[in-house]
Length: 125
Length: 383
Image (cartoon, rainbow over the protein chains, first blue to last red):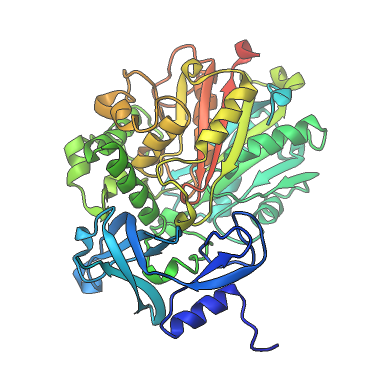
């Protein structure tokens, strides 16, 4: 099966198609991230994929200070998705220093370093 | 290790080399100079070493590279790589190997030339795949996010973080071996260049060259050497993650576990400890480890360090050599926590020598708050 996809490849492939899929354990029902061949909670090996709600909150955040001539400051943060998993990302659409802990954010598929990645923007309303 | 191994091994030699700037030397040169210094301190020869405990920032087989460079064929080698905590962790494996007779003279050694070689952190670490696209600055972004979360949950302030750096500098000012010895105020730290909010460049450890080495033997022959032996009473490791994105609670480190097991093995408690040497890669580290090791409650670390309480003349001597923030930080600092703790107990600390130190704690941190290793060292009086 030359077209078989391991967990990392599955996630990246979905992302390339504009979808944020999260691995979920069939045995205990818990999500995990990063994608693996086993559930790090119960060690079950039956993993399925679910579309993420995309809804989350900023768990913590920092501004990476960078000289303007090198592109200027940017945000790096940790987002906790409603599914219970956390991922590193950045919030776009607001100044990097305006990203705040507990802020409600919504995921979208963007691009960073030339590859599709999960990014976030502040949730509306 | 367990109480069964309490006091079974002792440090009989310490050495260091290349502090600050070691122009013209490779990391392995600095490593070897450190080894010679520690062996000289112990009155031993290179040919006596039959156990080697080493890792470096370079190469995939650094322990073999070190053995080859030193010209030795050790009976026992441990090159476990858990970042800067590795060298505290080797106290456990060296004690086990010595006690089991797998070696008779254990050499723990490290060296780096990263300041003169590149001026920034040298690491063989690969950027984690699920973090790399976001360009976190390694390792500061991880520590900055831990600091931000601690401030959010517990009201810890940038002023309190700054006071950790100010205290470290106050100790370093008395230490002729320290790299940064100029005055430093809270305002200096707060007003310094912001690198990764909320941390300024003065909240970050130094980038220096330097190496360190420790010679250990079984306790039954520890009194046959020139310097007073320093016994390993407890040492324990715990790890919670490798990548910062996998850390469950950014305000609680695995030091809670490593500390508890180390104290249990040593049969002492935090209030018994007379000198505390912590791996202070960033100012938040000191606050997190004081909490997690039980010197104060979770969330109270900021208040605990405020206004000189861990500086000379304060309530608890912490990082009495000036730490990684002001003394030396050659990529991995862990070995220097053990060396300073041992020297305080022996009575030959290079800076402020505290009076009658029988019990000291050395704590190593590795990765991005990933690996935590706690050791408790004691004088002859503590056996």
